[in-house]
Amino acid sequence: MGEIAVYEIKVESSFSGAHHLRGYDGQCENLHGHNWKVEVFVSSSELGEDGMVLDFRRLKEATQAVLETLDHRYLNEIPYFIEVNPSSENIAKYIFDRMRNRLGEKGVRVTRVTAWESAGASASYYED
Ligand SMILES: [Zn+2]
Image 1 (cartoon, rainbow, N blue to C red):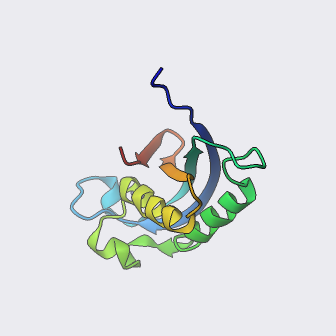
Image 2 (cartoon, rainbow, N blue to C red):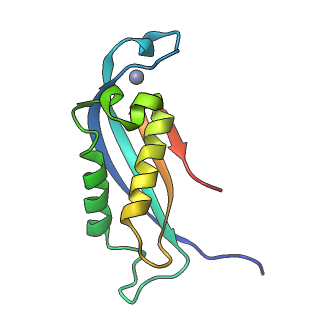
């Protein structure tokens, strides 16, 4: 009663980038790099005729295409991050918005993007 079934899939990928955080008093104020691990979650309440939410290969290709815009870059020089601090939170949102633009399939939703800046620290973006 009132429950909505949801299938969720996830791919993991990574990119290397450099950044510094403006207006932040601490180590991240200085130029440094991270190997960000990125998780992209996609869900649907119905499966396609193939029994899948979305082909993993297609999801991986879309994720790679977005991450290529960040890989081996100085993030502060990317137009989006000139206005917006390149924190892991904002990186997660940057990826989320671009993934959503790429995955227009009916009923398929990008539900969350998590950016891990180290093994023990991550930030996620999603919309309620
Ligand atoms: Zn940092």
